[in-house]
Image (cartoon, rainbow, N blue to C red; front, side, top):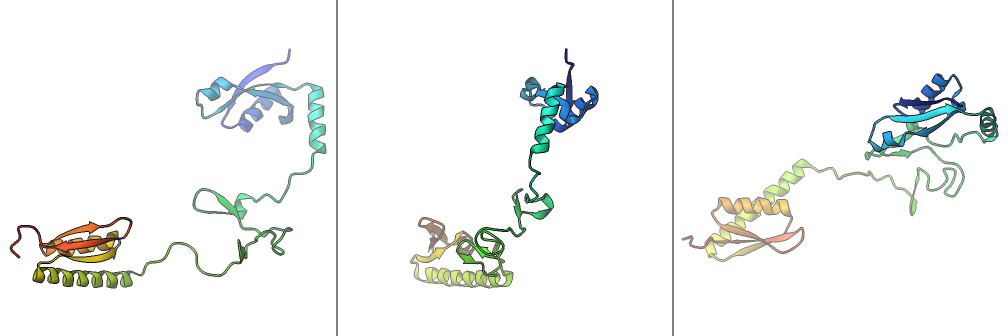
Amino acid sequence: MNEMIHIEGDTLEDAVLAAAGALGVERDAVEFKYDRDHLAAGANTVKIFASKKSPEAIAAARAAAAAAPPPSTDAPRRDDRRDDGRGRFRDDRPRGGGRGGPGGGRGPDRGRDGPRDDRPRGPRVRDPELDKERDEALKARAREVVATVVASGTAAVMPNLNSFERHLVHTIVAEAGLASVSIGEGLRKDVQISVKEGSSS
């Protein structure tokens, strides 16, 4: 009866190699099946039931391996690929054959609709000085509207503001002791500024 052993490894390959050593045979002479109960228990290792293949099975497997075509060398190695920032890798090597010139397909210098341009990609770089100027200009405009509301006692509206701009306006209005409320739907809304009810101003 053929000897069957129960053996464990960090990976399937580790387990098979360990079984080959225990059985005293080459790697390709090991016949195995998974220990499914071990896998079902959520283990982090691999357990197999392994035995030695028959001489006929070993000869057939080696003949099939000899007749198989050599493995392709076109598959990108990890070193040839670039991390796209999401844990995946993209092959940047030029490809041969196909449409789009010597690079094949779209290639590194072609886009979906033709040649790529050289415009920088990625998130827009903000200019802190320009942002500060815009914020100060908005605050100044809010103070002017506040002064008009105080002088006239009539509500006024500052239109089409994003959430940060509305925050700045609400802050200016609160400092002046007036009331403000955002009006509208979507990302950009109006801010209505008015005298608080019961105020003597």
